Length: 245
Image (cartoon, rainbow, N blue to C red; front, side):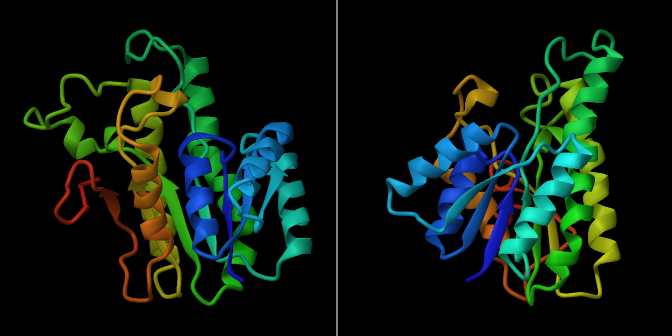
């Protein structure tokens, strides 16, 4: 059975992604900063008949937590097939470049950028043992420098979240370099925007979480001919999905 690890998977888009990957036959590890929340999420999935799921305590901002999660998961599986770096925070208000504090910036980057690097580096050895490893970094069109600087972009005037956008733009750059370094391997590494979705993150405004999950799972299940080193937002570009960095 193939396996997947999803960070921040106890609720929202991460939980839905875990559900859909489980439905696709994966054994799914639900990373949760608070293990109790993760265990509750697992129980919810089990009530739907999804038994190939288990919770793991994983705080992406804590080196010790990440290391322990790697050790525990390594005892359960010989290879990891999919890593979904989903855990993220918006940095909190105020969102503007002139008002946001350095502490806000540090917190957002610690989760959204450094956390992605911590987890990826910790699990890269297990991923290398997979015949078809996939890494999906959950991003946002708000992190596109090209779109944010384009006055004709429909969201130009209201998608201005300086802290969150800056952290996701940095994560996108990490994705570019990660894909480049793994270019001659079987890895597929992409940044995927699930779209504006009804979750706690958006005060439950936006599209359906099932659709957001499908958008992530699509790139977790890429075959050997699939793209790598790309940035996708099907909400922004319904035709091909690809958007500019």
